[in-house]
Length: 261
Image 1 (cartoon, rainbow, N blue to C red):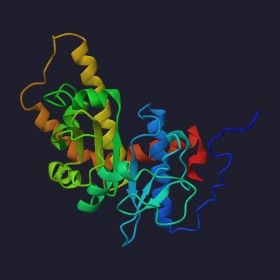
Image 2: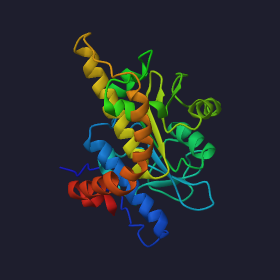
Image 3: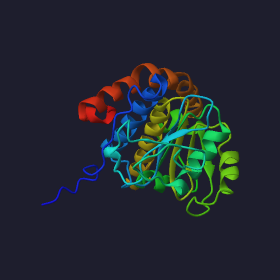
């Protein structure tokens, strides 16, 4: 029987040593993020994207090959694209320029948005469809809730005109609920972005569970959400840079070190 593995007919030469050390590190981190999204069950087949800016003066970004599952993405298979999602170098893979609309808008508008991650999880979509969005029901929600923006649904994000409205709605926030659509996070590093997304997704899942358990909800004491939000602002960068992301990267290597090739 013929080998139908999607990579069987495509030779992917390693780019390690052929790109700058800075770019290779971003490639490895982003490939790890794709694998971890798959591990946590947040992927939506081949749909949605995680992207990262390539270090340097050019407006180039790394994006997943559109025909690979997230669990198949490797550092060398990530495609370098321009602000329209089009490859800047020859690649055996296809990309989804339409799907890059959201990412390109944020990357171009925010210098600190070096990584952008967008998901379609059931819990994220459910909370995005809730009139009040994310509620301060859990510590996880309170840690990130004040850093969340909202963008109303306009249809599948293929209209470039939507980019201006998306950026205006995001403002300086680090995460967003795309109404009736899903979740989004931005970060100065892949690790910071992933950790924001993790908190947001966990908070959304807990909210759906809490609300489905009945109407006897215990709300936090007055003032505690604000205190927790300040604690979240102070601790996130440290947790991402020195604690959680290094641990998650080790986990990605244990799951399958091939992501880093």
